[in-house]
Image (tube, rainbow over all chains, first blue to last red; front, side, top):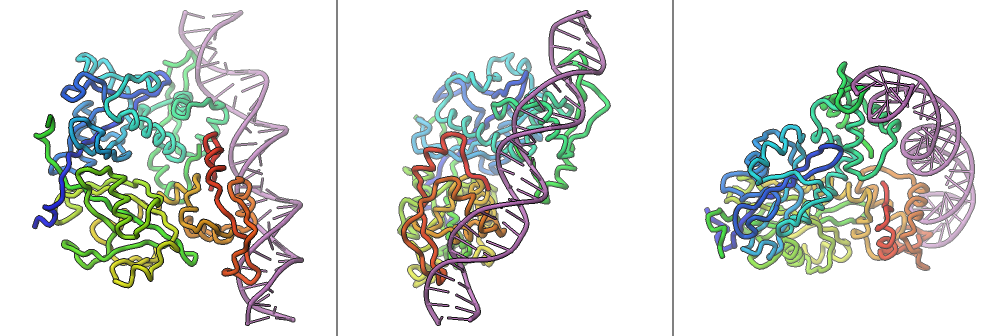
Length: 229
Length: 229
DNA sequence: GCAAAAGTGTTAATTATACACCCATGT
DNA sequence: ACATGGGTGTATAATTAACACTTTTGC
């Protein structure tokens, strides 16, 4: 039964780049590392792959461990396997990135115990090992993905306004958009449903709330329709 | 020193999806599996990750083992880690895809010993384990990548004609292009150098040979110039 | 002389960009 | 009444798509 016994075995870690969006800025959720090597330094949330779980399961488990959240958008990013990437031993790390609605997981909840904290993407502390490379790749992936697929909605509450959505896109792509063009374009896809409610937080006048209609997107996505940014 | 000893270790395999291009068709290089489980079936070329090599090194080693080729375009694709993907034991597989100029590695060379063979992409035999999924993903990746980056050239000889290049793109994207538009577009990027030679294989009249000027592409790629297909 | 693939420009259609004013509300 | 962000349409520019005939040469 053990055909492979002659081959070496390796530790496999999972690291998760957790994106959030708040106050017009993209953020990253980092944790203080609790064990050696690198104890006390900021790092991505991570853990080791168990014997009886798939990579995806492990990633969800690890994300859940930190945030208590389930059903979060999670996508495999890249696998890092340089021999000396972890000074304490040979560890191959499969990186995932997660997109979460930051409102579901406010800093207050966790930072009580100083072990996890949301950082602005452009003000990150020094990170463990090759985690900076991972963040970099995750950001590029998020950009590329957002260009043709509606992943941004994962970072927003279920109900959101067009200006909010635009600010998210501006944060992701690091560029300004014209509000009329943005509106026309996003609405032209017919995947947003205007609600009869307004959000009164952002302005005096209030802005209409919209919902992303995933079903409608799914129907069309099968053809050769896709977003374009 | 061994901080992680409590965690489980796993076999890590590398599998390589090897693309080639010949007679206007995209091809895949497959091998006959030499050992159990699955002995005698067609599969991707693969192997196990060694103790002292990075993932990239292992992928190159495995590709070299089959083709004797070095300096081949190779890119990590995805990591497959379902618990039961290999019936013989828990193996996590990191898939890579390679683009090779098929002329550098003709079927004759290898198929002498019936162990490796080029297959048309749309006439693949049944594959081992989850290898079909891998091929599928590799093809989608090749398409996506080709849309903005000049990877196609890796599949052609150093000197090639515009009609050849167009046929390659048609094979990758599975659609026909207009030859005037194709020519205008590809030449407008200024990354092809017309040679004073003709290829007389493909037609009576002969077609001018071109070379991809990687340097010139690299210069421009740094701005926000990129191909668009 | 004819079959087969190479090569060449122009026009129409579509898509993207630029741009300025009024609205609703809380203070 | 004024400051703040929300909401709306059109004209121009840029890009992409459609399209047909001539050239070369081996047979």
